[in-house]
Image (cartoon, one colour):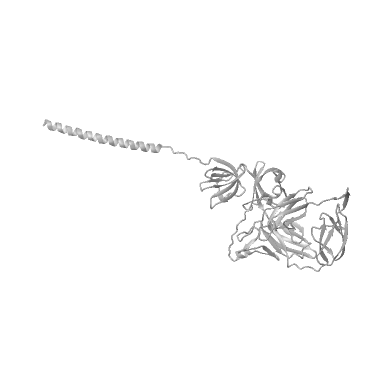
Length: 486
């Protein structure tokens, strides 16, 4: 009996010990779980690493939405770069409000944070300390001295200042005095220029009835009409008035940026002549010319009554010449050549006065116009006239270009070589209207404008346009350092 009781107590003790052993293992496991959970819950999150450690002030050149790239110019480094952006890139205006990359414009000034090695931007913010002057028509450039005037205020302007027209980079020498501009910069420095209103071209066809008369293009241009003129006109819609002997005609035209509009005047009836059109060619061109003792301007043809007229030419250093010519109603040309006076100096003869010339040497075979007047086919040389001039270059199948030059009054010959003109193609509308595989000018006939692109629109046909990038730089005697005056 005693043995049985002892055995029972031993069994109970073993069970209890086993239970304690089980309970103890279980407690250790739960404690460890709780410790792991607590450690996980209390673990501090690691802060993200900022990889965009570089900073720069930039000029926005272009935004390529499909590729998610931003082209910028870094003035401090005189370098253009392309950076990638993502949907997570922070883009803000100067007030801190969010905006999209598509809202960034060529010429905007911005502060960027970027990763140089990855070529990515982390943020783009329009510069809060930048200023802008919009729709400026009164300005003057002097790149030679690195300065500019906006109204009556003086600014510095680096020769690498970025200029844009319709979102494309252009050379600053292609800005002419009719253009309306937006300037952006910081402090007293101009950092970018955007052409708000550019210029196009007006070419007259079948203009015999109005040669020698006058053309008025709205309030922007008034000029006497000579043969083969190409008028540089600010873009816009205009009423054009032609006036002359027995003629007063009106036409409506639309001038588009960098495009040429042809105005056909073949429907104007030429009145019965009471006067004749006279073109005077005088050598030297600097000579003063008098017709019937009245001083005349020989740059343009003049109309004179039918009959006999006297013409006299005078110039310093030349003998005065007087001749007579008959006007019979037909267009005539009178040539007047003055002989140089010669002085004896020792055993040699010396001329008292020499005439300086301008030579346009390139692009070869391009038509050259100075201040709308046809000067000839390049290379061409003509008498030098000091001051600010607009040189326009035109060639069939190529984009017409204009440049502003400042000609010094130094009595010396000067030569200008301009960049080659860019060829047109079937996808290009900058310069002329494109139809199929051929290039056609906009033609104005009567009071209506014949525009093939508009006709195609009426038929429900869409045509694509590609803008031509103009990054030409004047070679030879560069005009980029000359002044542009407005």
